[in-house]
Length: 413
Image 1 (tube, rainbow, N blue to C red):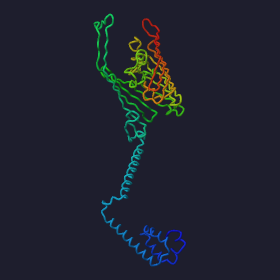
Image 2: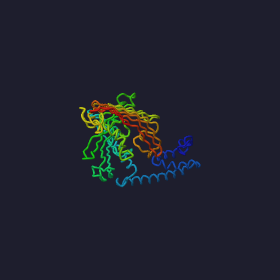
Image 3: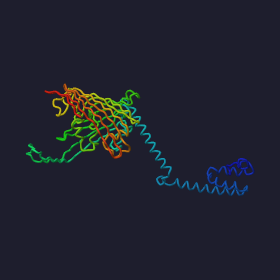
Image 4: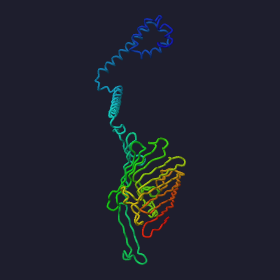
């Protein structure tokens, strides 16, 4: 070949074919590709004569002229009729350049306003449906908002027969009561702000009679590791209005109950009595380890103090505990041990959809001072799920030292 080792050692550069070589070098710029194809054949054949070289040079000149004619013809055509690949590449490169410049300018504009913290400056927000909920969030996930609602409408039919001596309130006859009702209509917002360590929840529910909105949940929760560092990674502080968390059945959402309502036990002496409280709590949660433990203790205004002010008026126990209104203060505590499974399974009472068994033990208590009376709710419960079978068992007790004309201690279990 012309550029191979053979050419470098013999007369292709300085030998008896020197003049021909000079001519080939002059034409190499225009016909390098064609010359390369011919050189292989020339190297494989015997040494050509001078006449043969002259003929090859003439053939190469003819091919170069043809290539130049084609190039001139292509250049003479209008630019719009030549959508070549290089033009497309240049257009794409131009778009990328403009996008990059725009991004840099936008970032520079945000940074040029030091009076507004960077995490509060506008940037792209996204919205979509993920992990079973609709969510709006910023690009980094430091600000999220999950708007949601719960709607429960039902038709109720009650038939009541007369008793043996006659039901005097209904003339001793059987009665039927039926009709529709909006049992629950709740509107809620939850998410996090300034990062995943600060979460919140706000929820309102409508009254079944009249439809007026009433505030139910209104709390924020701060992971204390944000303040105290790694030594507090399992601790969190919650403040606001929330359900008294001593009773598992009551704090399990009404959206995740097995029956239409919670049990009669819960209504008689359980969490239905304490309901929402206002206060502050300290939370311990050691995460999804082999034997995770979580607990919460808190100080409150007392039982059933939803939407009350600081003057210790309102709230207290329902009509089944006459005279025990306007609680002075309250305190609660609950500890839960996850022996098997995961906490998400513990959010409801069904075993459907489980991928593993669940076993959780819980212990809770809630104390309140209501006037001169002392009230103590307490429970020990267990939830077990295997396959499609779910079991929940609970001991619930109430110690009450009521006020009144004949004060008497009582215990209900």
